[in-house]
Image (cartoon, rainbow, N blue to C red; front, side, top):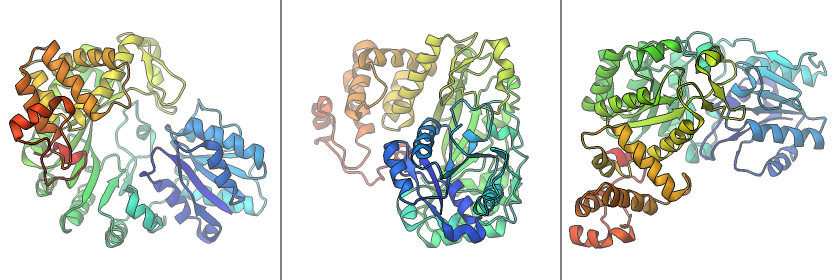
Length: 502
């Protein structure tokens, strides 16, 4: 049989790539099965489960988050079942050089594999084994491809994210991104995908995560898909990755009509420094970006994720801090802080000598240092990013953390706080919500000399916004004083997005 598998980052994730392969196996589909695991599963147990099927062919999706575990899995399977033909695909297998050892795999398909995987499986079943190990994928015609959506199981619909797409490719050439080397944007058949989305809706799907890189590039598609959701009865949730400088009025007007909590926009900013953006071939239209973010912030209920990157060629901490201060001045949305990664296939290496760029060869291939940022600086900023997510992005401390800034540099104040909290905790993981609250309370009252009553009341407003929560032990006296009880009941969803809603 043909077993299609991958190691997802979490159980709630699902692989749209495996379902595309399955959908396009044609007459071989009856011989195929999808079986997904996670990177937290024991690799030998995963191998045991896979080999229970006695697969003739194992198709394995390899990504930055599972590359090392996948290499270990491949080694075990080839030792125990050398007759199983292992075929790799996915971004981590599609670009050279390989920085994880995939030599134990039999074949590696590089690129969009729907057609090439089917052809390879036909050849293997007819004992017509290809001579070459690395197979460049032939570009599929999106209009002719079978769509994957009916192959999400009832369990997927109930328990996992459902990923969808309307297009592939990206028109931009940002040097840190694999999408920059893709073919230019290609669209699926609009009528067909809307029919498939309707079927998903009928089956009970209410959360759609679009993986398109530039959802709002094609107005016909964007308007039609937004209309699809606006015709439905809430609650539902739609996630789109959008470009920040292209929001015609038709799109703005539609986004403005979405109810709170129903639409999320991931907006890649990366830097607001024109010189740095030019270094990496990223076009910036600063005025348009600010205008559009301001509109989305003030005139819509859309939840935004704004992305910034630490470590871009030539960018100092001061410049990064200016970016963060600028974004927080125009938006109260989440700001995702990422550390620059050098992915195989990108052209970032052209900057290595000029800017002294040094990267890890271990996934996720983070930058270690450059001429502007020392190794120590990068380590500090990794912790900064983690604490930023726990305090600023989580929504758990939305009003409390704002007290810390108060007409000061957001970057400078949070930089000081992140260093202090790491010295106190010596960790960035597995810190409970109550402990996070305790650290923030101690820092603001003991280090920054804020009024305890003001901090306590503000923090309780934040923490008790979620239904069923109780005040942390150190705040219970304040809770009784201000609210007459240790917890309040709110009619709100227990979800990260809802914590950002007033």
